[in-house]
Image (cartoon, rainbow, N blue to C red):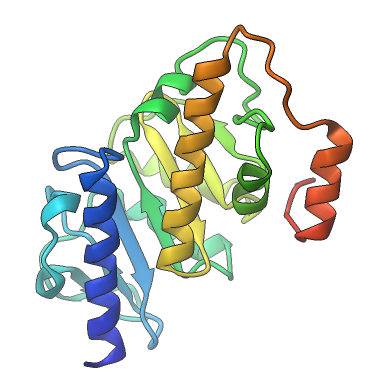
Length: 216
């Protein structure tokens, strides 16, 4: 099996895993990954994470031209913005995960640091998550907002919509976005209960030890 064939299978396997566990439902969410030749494999528009077909993924060449497969997700500008601004981005995942969306609707959030520092893994895998305002689905302005971050964030939360995370590869991106959803769930479960989160000193120790992009 070629490396690209393996990547196609992995994209579909990870997407189905997230779908089966309720992290995104129906035909929501989209996923993309860099190929060895600098192109992209992207989930097609209107498809379910639970039923992606490896042979029908949208295939882009290095110049960004669709060369094979079905038409891509309408959120391509969002994916492209991460690839254009983060040289380390090897994959991008966007979900409509319930707890993170619910948290994005609540008052009193820090738009520059959306998730409270509750666990070490939220810090290590995500850094600071930027809360972006609401955009209509497919609006190119979402991509422009990510472009405006100049590659300083690996994860953003689209208010009333869902998280988007870039990772070094498709497994890393999926693991990170699951950590985002888990942290949002913890935040909701403990909201109003005065939970004991990580102290600023503990956060800084994690940032230093694991070389996390944090001060951007």
